[in-house]
Length: 237
Image (cartoon, rainbow, N blue to C red; front, side, top):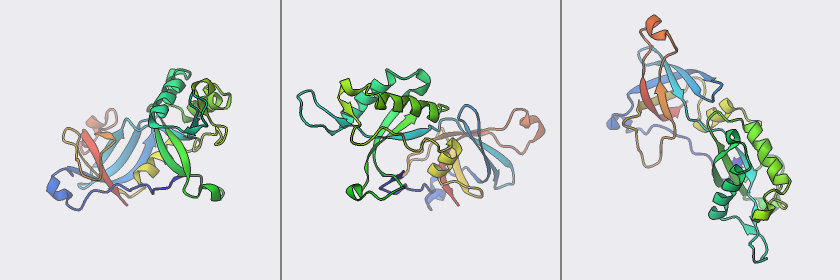
């Protein structure tokens, strides 16, 4: 899947020195994923100290085709409105197990990478299904597809007959997804600032509260490891 509007990369602006928010800069050396969905970013600071930045709230997601909505007055199906999408999320969550609940549905225009579709050169409407941190994309997407393909939501006026019910990007691993979304890779430079005073810029709204901490017991064995609560500001490679 590729959004028709290219994903914007997040960088720290050149005038960051004037903001006073780049309290910590580090070079990324390793990335780990914990069983609960927490992302660990290991790096080396400007003073050669080992730094661990913890991302506790990254949400996994997948895509489903946006349905058509049929009104009760018998008119032909139309594209779902934002109000319809909100109702759809409620209908889905009422039928899904708590661990597979959808936190939000976001309408986006996307183009599947495989095969050229001349009748939809500008893409087609999809819904981005954001899950809770640590949720299983495979399990949630499978449950959602079953609801869509069996017509469980037909009584509510939702139809996927023209667009199909297959979820997309289900097989993308969480760590791969995170690295793509943040434009991070080995050797990237990260800038973080205290979360109590998050950086706000016209073009960037920080989405992840990063807590810089060390592994258990490291405080006694490595005095060079820094600790603090930080907000993700930017990345560059």
